[in-house]
Image 1 (cartoon, helix red, strand yellow):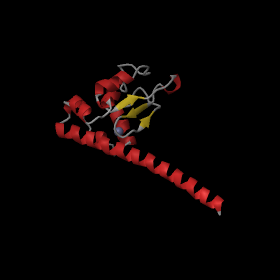
Image 2 (cartoon, rainbow, N blue to C red):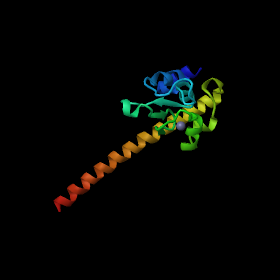
Image 3 (cartoon, helix red, strand yellow):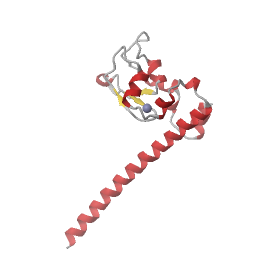
Image 4 (cartoon, protein in one colour):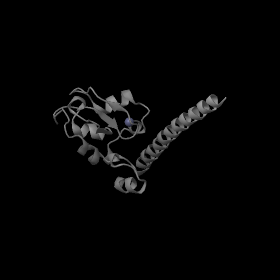
Length: 142
Ligand SMILES: [Zn+2]
């Protein structure tokens, strides 16, 4: 069901727990640890590691919160909650398999809202930059 929503709403694959699991290629913790790959992915995180130094950098697929410095005993849900309490995924607080359709849709909707905000922010920055340039040009002509 979630796969269909992801495709129809053009939402990145990171929305799916199985896709998030695939991103943890060099995760420094084993399955025995509380912050293992499955728990991380179920709590909404995917790996954003680029090299050995940031091997434990992970990001929430929904709110975009990035966390590193994980410890073996860390509970990914608890960490997510304490660093991003407003995240819609944290507020629902369920594993993907337990989500109701209405909850999935509300998460998908929140993603779209966050995405629109990000795009608007970039556009605003570009407009501000242009405005500065025009202003400078006007001052030079005086
Ligand atoms: Zn989040």
